[in-house]
Image (tube, rainbow over all chains, first blue to last red; front, side, top):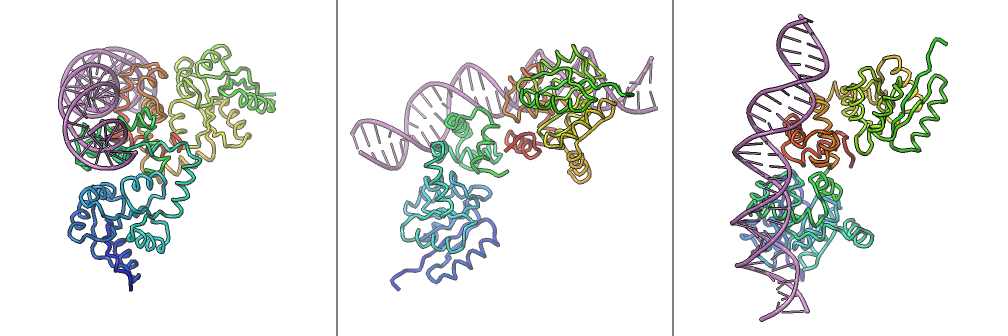
Length: 214
Length: 214
DNA sequence: CAACATCCGGGAAATTTTCCCGATTTCACC
DNA sequence: GGTGAAATCGGGAAAATTTCCCGGATGTTG
């Protein structure tokens, strides 16, 4: 074997899902799940202990979400390779995570083979995007209206997303560990950049772009 | 003939739609469209001039909507018989209009026969609801979670609906001809009654209940 | 190094939200 | 016809949020 075993950290708040993924991934002889975490906070802790080759991270978790956890990890460990594993099959979402430093983005609706492939690719230093989402991004880039969302900085996007989830300034500040003042400022910036004048338009925009459901 | 001709006022902001309806209704020998209006304001004016037996009113019109127009008419002419003709095939919507004094509610998706039948029934002093919507209401009443929306007064509902459409306090006050102060107070009441703590929840609630689309 | 974007948050004015209150009007019911 | 409940409307005042403007810290890139 010229290949080293790929050491993986698995982050997902659903225990059952995590177990299943763990087992599936380890069917592949080149992959070993060396650690698991069930929250963003824990992921950051555990990452430091194991320094895995690849971190497979669920995006939607209570408390600090996957995005924020990833950013913390990357801030501390520059070379970390994070593969986002999300339920959102959405171009805007994927673009934002990659912009924030993710090395890959795989939708949960994709096949298992795709996840394995992504883990391998990312471990080799390459980037990987679900084919289904890559198509959407490509289409949106060519046809779309310039994609307003991509004009948001990662932080602005995150504040927007949390707001759209129904969190108020205080809760957002708590999650991101910044002051309410800063949250308010970002909020205003987002509204300006997206050209949305009231909360109703913001929510509808968020729904339209798949940041939240229904 | 033991029957009088039914004199109808037709209110819809789309000229073509109005023409079509007019022709269709007059195919029925017992019905005559004696007047038309293309806005809520105009409807109120014209009503006074013609005192029709039945007013067939579209709900969604720019400026004063059909609901508000109806309420004005009813406030002045107690015995007016208003038949709402709406694109919304939605239980909550229908219940609100009937609660506000409409004598009938017919969805635009319904058959033409249904509209004629509704006009005749309403002219005789009876009430009429689209069968499709009646079913929904019945189901919601029996199965639903008590239908929070029905706890709103007509005015509260109207303020909520306009808010959900993206209007701000100033615009709502303008449409309803009341002060911004009152709008703000209703807004607070709605939030309390529906148990919604932030604008995001309000918009999602509105979407879920079909008050607005997408 | 310089230019630029991002991140963070203070200050202060403007606006909105909330809570409390009272005056009418309407309406159902006895 | 009287009575009580609910609805409509809006003022006053405190609390909270939004907005606009600013400057420093940090990081990246040419």
